[in-house]
Length: 411
Image (cartoon, rainbow, N blue to C red; front, top):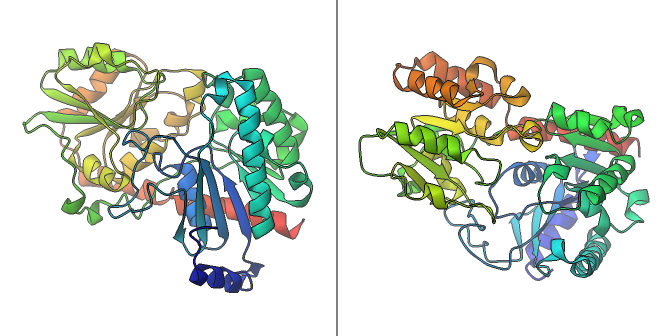
């Protein structure tokens, strides 16, 4: 590989001969549905923690354009953001591949892209001889060389109800997901709703399906490690209360709710922080003075941003897609001790009295007024932070690693 230096090759050769906790250092291919430099979430965190005890190759599709809406630095001095091949640490190699655009609207382009990716995976396996392959989206079934299914330990990490995504062939996704579930040793879902959906593929395979929720990067989201050097200039200089959402802005967001509440509360600024997905129209919100769309912000700056917010929100529409989401952002909000208002559905109700939930605009407003007009006790904030620590990405990765070790023993 172009950027793998002699030191790294020598290091990994030695590492593959070392026993880790009674198990040989495993070679894992993680095929991600998101670019390494998209919003840092489950794929990046899980693979990065896995690299502490295993050798990881993280493969993703890279955008053709380098812009701040789709490329987000993870650290202050991240010089890899424009690279296609680099090492995060001695055990982890990132490969970001550009493919031909518009494959969702042209099957011929998709066939070419699938062939390109399949050949890349064959080459990588020839170089690394993978023990484990983790896939994260049904469409990836089309790029997996079919002989891999007989020789590798497969894990399907299902993060969303993909058949609800727009601009995808629903029947194709359903068929591919059935094949993946049948071919995988373990199927992991992020929520109970997804677990129930996956069982529909084949109820007889229930023993291989497990729920591993999302989590939080405790090392980053730590109020005691706030560093002013990581501040970003997104807040207005006024004495208004600050209410914020951090995440992708897409069709599942209830921006009309924010608009209605903002128009009634000129004393509150609403900050919508994150990349805007293609096709999301913000025109009717852009002239509202106290709704501020900041665009994507670097990962390292998010704890500082959260620290300055008075209330954190998750204003989603209740759709089949949303009902399957175990929200990463709530874990991150809680890690910073922040009061949270989120749409009420099964996955958010599991947070209990740690957060406020709503179903109507009136309930949302009541929650907001209650939070802004009461003095929070330190014990409440501490309770939120303790919960977050018990639900870290390290804990989640340990669960997944147990499946890997068990699967390798029984292979």
